[in-house]
Length: 58
Image (tube, rainbow, N blue to C red; front, side, top):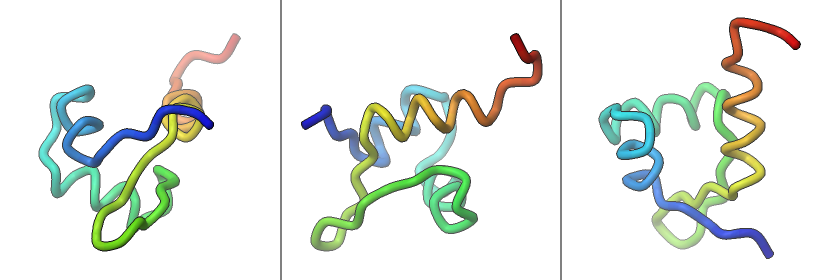
């Protein structure tokens, strides 16, 4: 199982607010699992999100 990150971890990683991360999840830009009352984001979902945000293709 890959490491799971909280929304706060993701917000810190990208230098954005927690509300922005929640918005990405709501708009389905960032995949997440809801566990209890919190969202958790896997390493593979973060990698997919970063790839979808690329402006330069290989």
